[in-house]
Length: 234
Image (tube, rainbow, N blue to C red; front, side):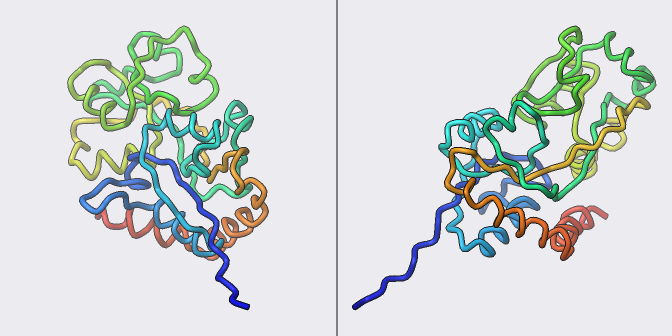
């Protein structure tokens, strides 16, 4: 009797640009998250497929089960209704506010934000007070690149961002003398997780994904690949 090899389970990652975690180049997508998910797929014997789409559509696809996983997810109760998060975060960031250089002192406290329009990325999770504040004058845009471009053009005075991504972008594009962090900082931790659609077959293998993610963090694999991207700035 002929025994055919067992076919690996397909794992579809929905993602978009978010340097240095996801970076588009001439070959496609590279970055910290891509290195991470490729290693996860090897250790789980998955057949990885990467699909690039806007962040909001990716979340909708997770809700419907059209895709299996996303990386770079901050935990939110609303998302947890349709996403199963791995136990171990693989990266820790914080939220910061940014202005054009010379205007940063205008934002000393959270209350100072009420005097300005604030740019943010649609469907992003920053911190509860800001996310749920309907009184602030917020301008939502599709991605961070657009956010920074609009700040530079003076379309709004303040933008909010996740420091591990925005600081990298500012440094890499030579904008350190043009964009500054404000003195006000909420001091929150933005932990990044791998998330699995609860309608995906991978939700039944969450224990395996939890084990692999913990191994990768404990082994220093994530620190090593992070250094390859962040360390290359100097």
